[in-house]
Length: 333
Image 1 (spheres, rainbow, N blue to C red):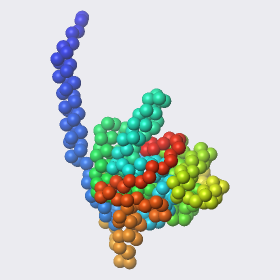
Image 2 (tube, rainbow, N blue to C red):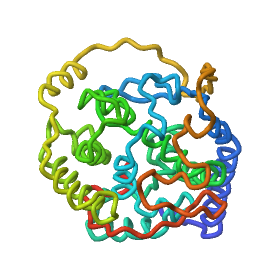
Image 3 (cartoon, helix red, strand yellow):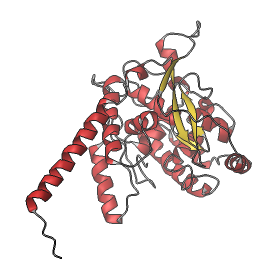
Image 4 (cartoon, helix red, strand yellow):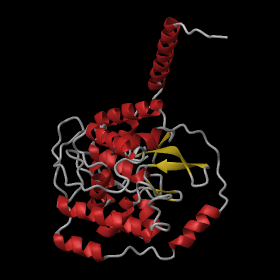
């Protein structure tokens, strides 16, 4: 039996599917959360994160998290390491890096794979705070919209502060404050340039590819590249760069902790994935906005580094740093 396909019906079917998909996207965008609450640095919110066994756990983002590290306590080397390694155009773009997207597409086509992401730091914050990790077109559209809104409402310094407090750095280890304690037994404010580069080197894949207990030398090599970027940017002097290169991160004995964490049967409450803003208790001795945030109201630029002039939109231009290719580059998802 021969089946004849009517071209007009096929066209109508395709058009109908496109209209339905557009309607779905439109409705999804209407339900996106507001980013306005992120302006208040005294608020905490609850997000859901997945552990290495696939279970979900609630995590606080904000002052109610004991590992929360305000921008003032994060070393400038940590801030610049993340920017130069993950999003070198952070102070140039307004949430979306078109050039990085083009480079990622070119790389993926050449390698016939999809191993390079092009998400900016702002997009990663939007995803980590508000969206799931599913790789779909609809989620990517939501991520882009939220990133643009964040760039309009928040300073670059605030976006960077949020990013560095929610990045994954180990088994249920989120944020540089927790990472500094977990790996080095010290607060984030006491991290050395080598330790800052070491934590940054793990960002593309702390579970497998850049897990220091499985691939220590791979992490060290990438941290060497990041230290070179910090030197070229002028964040480190030549002497500081040489000292950092000679330093070996001390993570002895941590493999046992990781193994126990993976094997331990953790009990948790299966909460909704909805974001719940909460107001942190105000400290009557807490100074005004500057000490609470650690960022300049004008620039949001990491202290101790070249200042970035504001343009009134939250996107602040900066010199384009020399950026040799890094393994598993920017915005790996």
